[in-house]
Structure formats: C-alpha cells, structure tokens
Image 1 (spheres, one colour):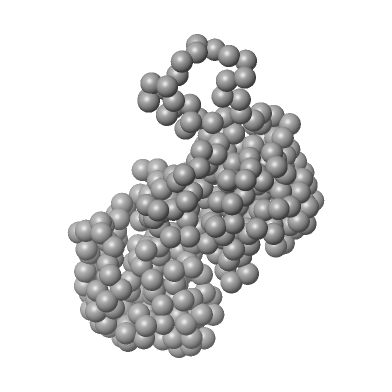
Image 2 (cartoon, helix red, strand yellow):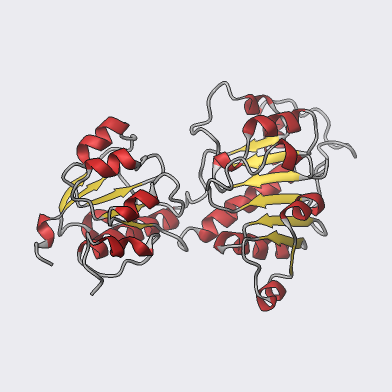
Length: 338
C-alpha cells in the first residue's frame, strides 16, 4: 500500500447491526447514525472522496454514483443480492463489489417455509378472524380448510444455497422436491435432497407449491407473468423471498383475483415499501411480509461482520470473504491481493 489505512475514507450509508465500527475503525469513517435511507443526491454528495462504501439494497449504486466517487475501490453490500449495484460499470472502473452470502441462508429458508405454511394453512386469515372477534362456531368440518403439505410437490426455482435449505425443510414435512436450476445438480446432490430436475415449464405444471430463489437479472425480470402463471395448477401456491420484480404483480393480482392459482405468499415486491394503493392488499388469498427474509438477530449481526470485513480487506489489499466481480482487478485501480 502506498497510503496508510487511516487515510482511506469509508462511508457506511446507515446504522447496521454487527461490529462494523470496530472492524472499520482503522479508516477515516463516516458512519451514519441513522436508519433512514439516503436520497440519491445525498448519496452522490457523500461518495465523492470515499475509497469504500458499505451500503444495502435501498442504496442505488449506478453509473452516476460510481462516476462521482473518483477514489472508490470497493462497494460492500449488506445483502446477498446486488441488483442495486451496477456491477458491470464497477468492474470497468476497477471497483470491487462484495456481498454476504451463506450467513443468511437459514434465516431466509426459515421465512420461506413460514410463508409456505402460512398460506397453505391460512394462518393469517385465522389469526385475523380471532383478533377481529369474527370466530363464531367452535368447530365445523369445512371451516378454514387449507392445503396439506405431506405428499405435495414443492417446485424450487433456483437450487442454490437457499433453495437447498428450503428443500431440506420440505423433506421433513414429507414433501416431494422438484427443482429447476440454470445448472443441474450432480446425481449425488439430487439423491441427497430426493430432488427431481424439471424444465421451467414442467416445474410450473407439476408443482403444488412454487418457491422462487433466483437472482434478479434482465432474464429473470417478470419471469413470473401471465403466461407462466397460466401454466400452474389452479390449486397451486406461489412463494417468493427472492426479489420483487421477478414477479409481474399486475399479472399475479389478476390470477389470484380470478382464482387461476390458489394463493401466493410474498416477502418482496416490485416497489418497496408496498404502495398503500397496491391491488394486492385487496385480496384474501395472499400472505405478505415486509422484506424480512434475513431479519433474525444473529443473522443480521453476522451480515454486518462479513460486509465490514469484505470492505476492510479490499482496502488493505487482502482477499475479501465474498467477491462478486472477480474481473475487477484487470482494470487496475487496486493492487492484487496479498
């Protein structure tokens, strides 16, 4: 290094759980003691002299931000997903992009299964019925009928870390696992999850539950739309803890309203927070949570630890724990890892 670490300037865009201050204390640290999102103009002004940024999903790190940050060497995101960062542009500018996979796998898989159980057994509807004092009959054979899980087919779209963790949980409930992935698993892995590979269309046609675990890309934007939903069973449920824009919410609303599928459970949305006038809010065959897939205390602490370590390592010329764009070093802004 030609400059001391204390000369490196770092922006942390909001207050995050985890030992971030301690890990980054050796740098000139601008740590926002605030849980509110920065506006785009505020972010652009703050990054001008920064060597590192620790950000999260609401922070749009696009070409304009990257161009404004002349000294920038690393963007460390407090998330697994990085669709809020223009990775291609960062790579061209020799800027590392890092993320926090692995540590939130179990928490997100837990919520996925909570949503699956919740929509299948109408948990939120039942809760509201009791709270609103509308529960009239002690018991009735056709009251609040939901869907069984044992023996049903769970179609997992995206068999990465989280998809596999969901499959493990589903096996405990006696479900049959189908999956579609860009790269097919080895026969050994398929056997370990009792998982059967299907084409995308076949997965939609056969599954009783479809759970989405793929990244948001140009190819996956609105992958779930009117045409693809039409291939699903009328008795099937759609679950997503991935990224909101993978689903065309207008098409989903129409499908749920007209009972083309039985229900949906979503933790992510095209626009967040979900607008107060969203037609999804008028449905009773939907379960909604406010993007809380990784919202477990231990998980969020570990995410902060990993995000800070990633950033510090890049600025110190060391290999980060998780690097998104391995080609950034070809563009010469940073020294190779020591």
